[in-house]
Length: 347
Image (cartoon, rainbow, N blue to C red; front, side, top):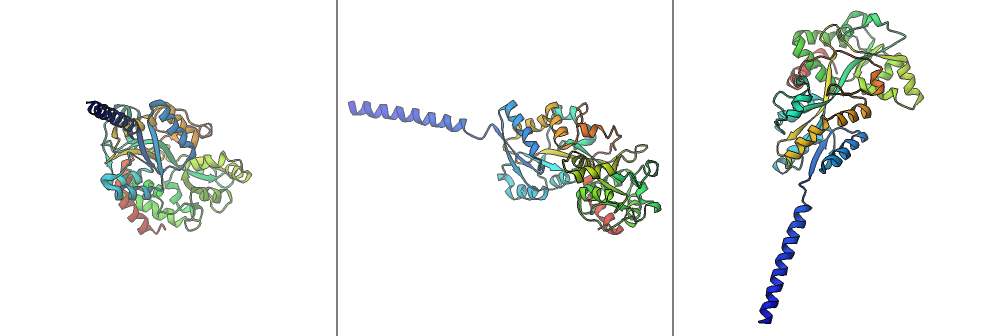
């Protein structure tokens, strides 16, 4: 009998141990986490993730990569993907994720209230979180303020040999063309591109900062660039960068018309997200006042949510009128934009 009692005690102890193991396993399971695949490469974004974890107890697991690399990774992972949230830079790239059916629609009263309709997908596939103005930067010694006010001006004959811009293979320029196709139509957009190309001071090369530096050096008189690259130079501790900003100024084009083209960085919930609820919470957090302030201060981007203060450097540029065309049109019109650039000889 004693042996049976001993066996019974062992059996009960085993069950208890198994139960404890099960509880421990459940507690350590990856339920209180969200897996973020991000194409934003800013160290300051870590503050966003840390703050989210502090507020919610949800751990952020970050995978960084280039936009196309992340898209390909999620495609290859298929239904086994660990990705919950996809963060992309540029609406055109979010469209690529949309076309590949990598995102799922979500319904969020908080996001629909805070994010303007023009900065989010009409069906809730993704939401813009920051705004990026595509501005004109010109040399203050070589251009008078009354000589330039619109993107269209850069295609006029008087600007021949005076314009710098990066390659049409860059998605920022493709999205600019996509927005123009939406509001101006294909014919007018193509006429503008042909005029712009004929006014190039050189063949396109380098990124936006290269264009800005070329303007300061007198290699061209004006360039098209995202605003935060100008701000990045202005906040630099290098004398040569500060010299560039001293010789140049920012113009927000088309203030008397449709407004300045704006793009976004944004996020969507991955179609096969294993932690959808946490993913929605994370994107809602990115639209919160605290997160929007971090976006503004860390990379000098314009917040997507109205009422958020801009960074001090951005405030010096003043207010501007933004084009209100829905940014989802950039991707939808991307194939046509590529054809226009090719026909016009924009390398």
